[in-house]
Image (cartoon, rainbow, N blue to C red; front, side, top):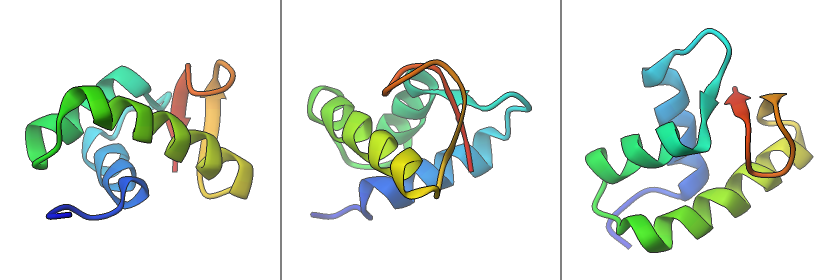
Length: 74
């Protein structure tokens, strides 16, 4: 793969988007597709999994919603 791990890309997106209440999965997906060589369709599935795992491990905080929907913060 010619891109970093999905978790690293999500972390970068959250830092650069810098939204006060956290960023949505759709906003994160848009940022990643615009800045990295990935396809939107396959990236969406990977992002969902990476977000769920990030919340479970404690690396990400979910400020709204459940599962892979809602808003996320670092």
